[in-house]
Length: 129
Image (tube, one colour):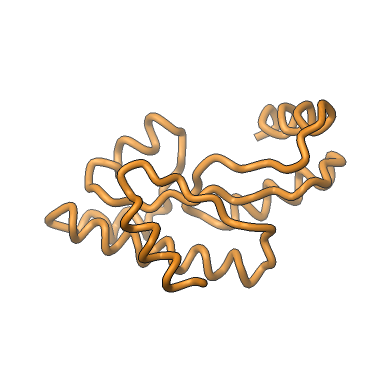
């Protein structure tokens, strides 16, 4: 995480007016990142990046390709899904809960990674806005 903070500081020092995080599934990771950025003197808005899981294969692909840690509680629920549609419903519910918590903590906005998930993002938006 230290290299992420170093690169974020470099971006801000070079004029970035806000930052968008990589996708994450554990809000505590976001809150910790923001705290560490603030301690490093990064004071621009830091927008959380949300990725709804919509396919069973994403349980293994997302951590491997994007180095995104999926909490065991979430992974366990996803493993119960027998179809991608079931996985998508679980992923939507997780993202809704995640977004609601972030909003309660007054995040400056939400960024959705929509790859394969535009319909899911619409469902999430209807629930949280």
